[in-house]
Length: 218
Image (cartoon, rainbow, N blue to C red; front, side):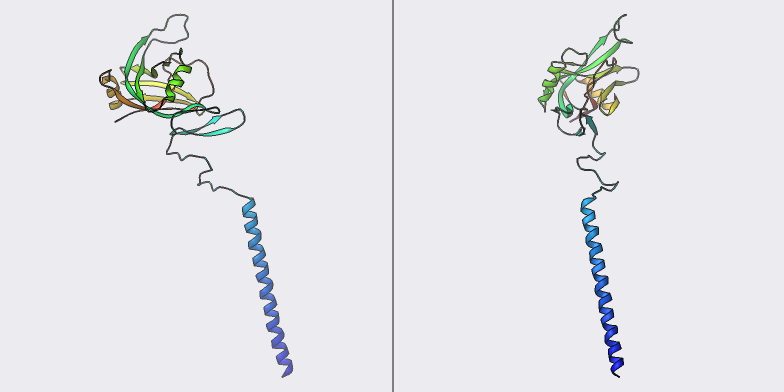
């Protein structure tokens, strides 16, 4: 009888020791996993990295000498030492078109009808600083920004635009084109436009514009 009690007691003690040992092992394992988790941070592929913007907004990265700078093109038009001028703004004004004749010996390929937007008001005064810095080139003046080439047969204003994200093609078509064509000093319209970061430079084609994503808004 005493042997039976001893055996039962021993068995219970053994089970308690095993349970405690397993508990300690599990607790150590979970603690180690948590510590590892705080050291090895990663972002799932379907989750945005810090400072990245959803593709629902026009975005790209600007190249600075030492880093890649995330740029959100839906930000207000502004200047950054790493990205230059970039962002979105609204201009009030009207369309102006002039023929640019390509003469022999000049850096051009064809004669075009170039469309510019004369600015009468804006929601962002930084545009005037940008225009002053670019005064003298073919795509900006004191009070206007270039939109591109008016192609009557194609029924569009076409342009190319360069940024740190590459080359972008614009076409202003349909009702937006008609509103631009009907605008004048007494019938101004609101034009939303976007400038990408561009830290490069060089010769530009006849139909170049500093801006992209043109849109007529109320």
